Length: 445
Ligand SMILES: *Cc1c(COP(=O)(O)O)cnc(C)c1O
Image (cartoon, rainbow, N blue to C red; front, side, top):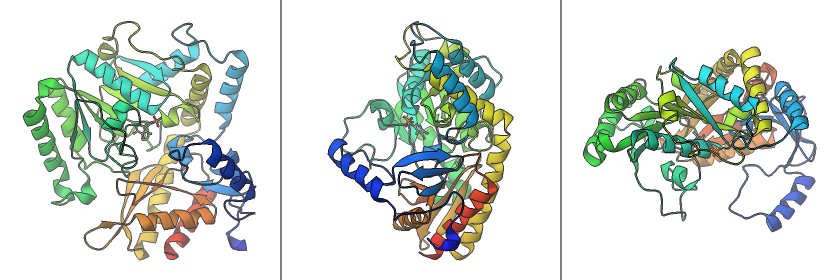
């Protein structure tokens, strides 16, 4: 990195990865399986709002937030205070054995914050996949129906059921079958790649949805439609305007439950508490995780009281689900978002990133589309009029940025989407600095 490229939290003092990270990599090769991979080779020793520091003392601006988890910042003060205090009192009882108030408080917050003023209930789990699994259990139990409808480009997790619901074969499904039954896939109204043009995406995708439901399954056999209001791993795909509304209306008409998987898009990330709000849909069930625990593992299913109450006592649970330290951390994260104005901040971050990317795109023809909302913005990289995906360019930009002290992630079914997921607490200074590196990365392509 050039001298002028140094800043307070973007500072490289060794080559990347440095000698200490390389030593750990050698130990890792002997202790961990190869199929478990990391996006970056640097081992982390410390972190702060918007940056991480590796074991060699290199400091990187963080535009990934550990995949949309540390939205309120890493070791955010309110999270640390609450979780630390909880650690000194008790670490575990199992909520199914002895309950505690923190769990209840997190559920009350989620019931209050999620869309719709109907009566709600929330149950807590450990991971996004576990929340999605349980949302399906609730939906099947409440409706007495088997089928679950999912979308192209969806990501719902890596357990058997959620892997089945996930779209991409590589890397998530290949060699891991057979898969769970009664999962049906329909097209996503993906404007940028809709064959007959973006203006037709919502209408035609809905027609295809309807055809699959009515001809292949029968609406009376469908328990739920599950959708990410903005698709995450699939490439930050924002469904064509009106598409989710049509799906929601159809579901309501046929007694099908609409599940919004807000594991990535929720908890303030898009500048609203939940991405569903932008399309003004009120899902029957919603899954949350990633940003919820302020960096600790916690997930939730929030839904209509009559659905959630329909399951028999003892039917739902888990040894660790709703761990008291994770609940305390979540209360700190929710408090940060509400009291530190982070929804407005997420919107502002989105404006900055979209404007900066727009300026880069003015000269970088490879940027086919910039999309997303709030602190969840993606750029799809393509070549030629046929929009050939350019995963190599994404890899090159990520590599350049890393070598200049900025961490960003890729996404997309074709691996050709750069995704920007900074923590909502990142300062303007760090964000502009990171966007400057991104600009240089495109110049270097
Ligand atoms: C990450 C993610 C999941 C899975 O969450 P895990 O905590 O990794 O199990 C599910 N759905 C969406 C939309 C996600 O982004």
